[in-house]
Image (tube, rainbow, N blue to C red):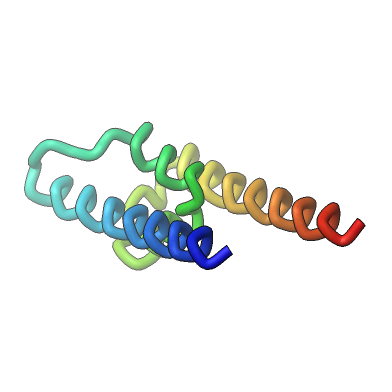
Amino acid sequence: MYYFYLYLAAVNLAAFAAMGLDKRRARKGRWRIRERTLFLLALLGGSIGSLAGMQCFRHKTKHPRFVWGMPAILALHLLLAWLYFRLRRL
């Protein structure tokens, strides 16, 4: 379980950093990180980092796909965690 928590910390840190990096690149008019990549990081377990990055950097906060999509991914992760621990007790 230790490695799972370490993985979650790493992917959330990566998702947070990707949001910040994409915001910086957007301001400078440089090459951007694909939205698909940002969503993939969230789906791989970085939904909390993605949401924190959105709020901290004020990035993608006016895009409905992100405003609704990132919390939906977090809700999915919470549901899966709840089911895992619920079924584990049986």
